[in-house]
Image 1 (cartoon, rainbow, N blue to C red):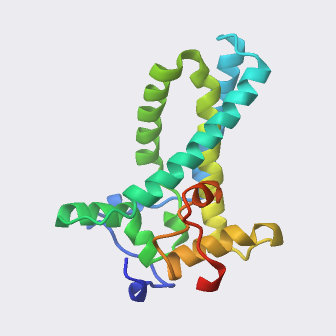
Image 2 (cartoon, rainbow, N blue to C red):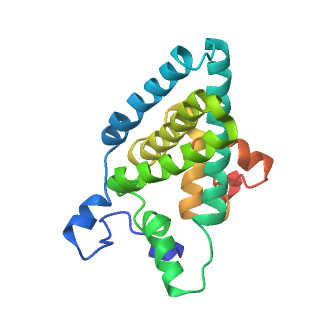
Length: 205
């Protein structure tokens, strides 16, 4: 997305179908109401029926959060900002993320809508199940919690003024949108930006 095309008001229309257009939007409360019960049920199932101790669950939960933060960074850097050549791929990337860069203050498109979100969650859970066996019941809730924290932080950054202790995250993400889209790919954390040296410089503000 070219910086001169950013619109701080309004909302894009992505689909001709009114039904699909409605399904492309959501609110954080909808996502919370879906995923928090799933997280609790998975943790309970792992503890009560799969023999995972509380200590193991805590460790795997934190590992899942870390895994999400890494995936968040990699997806944002290499998929969401992929420079596609074909028109179809360009349209896909625009629908996936480009629309957010054109309309960064559109609060209805800061979380992935429920249906595609659940499809992706089922696919990822299946993959993690094959890799982690019973440990998935603690790892995946942590992964989902990381996603919810990412979505919540993303929503807050575009909707509210920053609290003092989180100003760095707000600054980095706004720099990503308005000054340097090739930096500042972490939203919920600057960890991977620091590791991969993509933290926006303060003098770029």
